[in-house]
Length: 450
Image 1: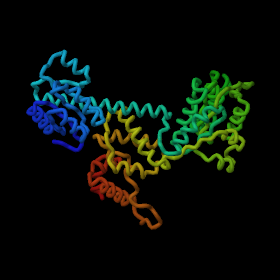
Image 2: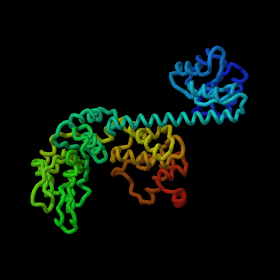
Image 3: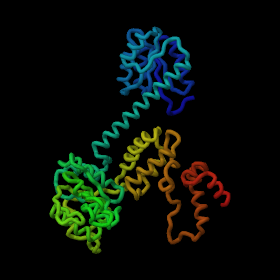
Image 4: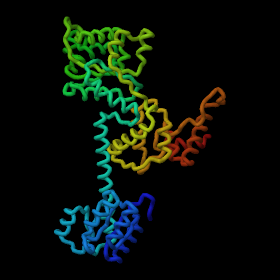
């Protein structure tokens, strides 16, 4: 039984009966096959259709099947694996065929079931190789762009600006919403700079308690405080000769803002408990998802530190402002997630693309990566459907809340939402349960209660 996605096989044998028999059999067992008995007919077929596999007689009238296979691939402008059928089975013949470019061979006379197994194995192997090469190209492209993928003009501008910022030695301030890729930019600046051979050290200023942050940044000497049993260098000295990435610099307490300003001005650090300062040669890239100018106006951030940080600025756009980049990044992360989880997903349902483009992506690229990972684990086939996406993406709000929104109990609101999800997935309860993030038993219980 054939389907729209059945592999297309070209059968060429100058024995018309064999060509017809093989072609008809392959068509019955799940392939789409076209059979011909000479070279002109094979080339004409290749001008009309693109074949996934070429099944050729080893010795045709006037030329070998492998020579004809090369001509067929030139006409269809796409390579395809070649399986050779030969009536002269020997080790030498097999080696000659493989050296000449055949993927596999089968000796005549053969069982049709064996032929089917060979064809399937060759197609599966070829498909895997194509997917691996596609993944390698995607990884190469990602590496070339330092992971900052996307064709939107704003991202092209970011990639063009990075080498220029990298060659300067001033502090770079990277701004943008959480999850837009600020650390990727910092790494790219480091790798494009003259400091690329030096260390790259990152610290999140908002993730460490203020009591420990000073020691993390500038180090301490033994005995400086309770628990300081050894000297600690601090990240400024750990990044000596390289780049220090200060993430969420807007979260620094006021006292440490003063200390950071001095380090940037004097290029020296004083470890906690030390009597003298130590010179450092460290390039700083800082990042924030806050409006630092507004923080200055509110008295939460020092204006002199902002001036020192904001020497070279790079602003990253939110994902929702990058148009078709959403789909490009989704496919990139999908290829990586499939490779990690040993899954094969070949297609996206049209509704998936629509949902991805409509979603606001408040978590930006980081949220998109999470969505891809969850979708890959939820997908059991080779096509991604809307119900494989997390509920935050798969189910847009059914009704926009407003002042006119009727007052109702939480139970009634839940019931309406479940009805909306069921309607969206065509009444299929298993899919609705996946979208809602509950098991089928819970869904049945809620439906019965409603």
